[in-house]
Image (tube, rainbow, N blue to C red):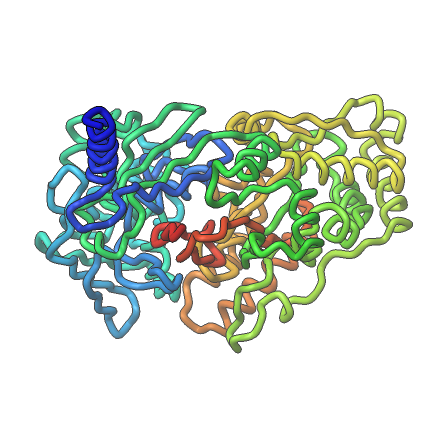
Length: 540
């Protein structure tokens, strides 16, 4: 009997210990809420001005915060800034920072950090690909291109809490830009003391809702709630963990196996299946973005616009979005996607009209004419072993295979396929080492300029080196006026011009299919962001 009592007491003590170990002082279960998912590619850098895509931004937007940010409803609101004033002429913005903002190492976030960060992003020696997105600031372009000085960049910390910025011309979406990652601040003291601060989690310092605590390159990213964040009370997650897996099928299997709470990059076949089953886990989020192919103009015969147009006209885009992508995407009608408004508050896309047509017969005529002008035949073309380059992804592969078959069937041409890791693709595009390459662009702000600016001759993302002075002039005109009618008309002309020259072949306008496990709440979809997980909660 005594032995039985002893065993019972041991069980009671064990249960007591277990409960004690799982409880916290607030009486919660104590089980940490860690949101798990996959980041489809290894980040090139987690230093904000050196980032250049969604493979970095989904992380950066959780560990950093700009003057403005997106709240739990997905609305643009003051972030590091408590308030701001705009001068009557629309040129000068004066931001007042919050009193209680700190870096993850405990340092205060100051206006000087912002001044330092923006000028650093423009420093020619940093060679930031996204430096041009700061060109709205007076003196920024001149400094970045080596024609002006750092001191002439019109961003200035008036005191610890006040930042004054003067623009080249009134910019309707400037507040939105300050929520973009190139405009995020970095800790001046940390960066100046350690140039390699952003390469390891141990030395990484940020100012957002979460902080980086682990970075196993090509394997895993782990973020932990930043208790020093001014709005920490609104953050319900204890952390976010992201695997780094390029293969969509492997990532999907992990989600299906219960290892992930949310997954953004899903195989097209899975999207189709979930749609057919009306699965409540599937969400088709709005997305301002365009999927396209770069055509290298330095490679003959792709230098010939008739050849580029032939490739475009041979694509049956309706079949691609209906039978291949199957995620609610829209067959491209130009380069500017739906979701961006014109001066009348209506779809910019509708006011420009359809600039792309599917015409197999015309495509064949144009290809023959174009090849003839370049002294080539279809046999010459096929003997050239041209390749369409795409980054590893089951979806990209299927789309590329469909495009390859359409070109073979309609035009009688053979183009091979080559897949590489995302960063390799980016590097080869920068080096001009491709014939045709898959491209895509998600808008950074809600204005047609966010897409059209890609083919500005000075854009670091102009991978086809499109250089049309008339096109540049139209963009300059759009950037130099606050007259919305003039701005929009200039951009309409610009889109028609770039589609007439066709340096890229638009395929479809994006949506953002993603799956979300039952019990995960608070994820919002902003059209120019991946699903915002900052305010997510796991309720079961």
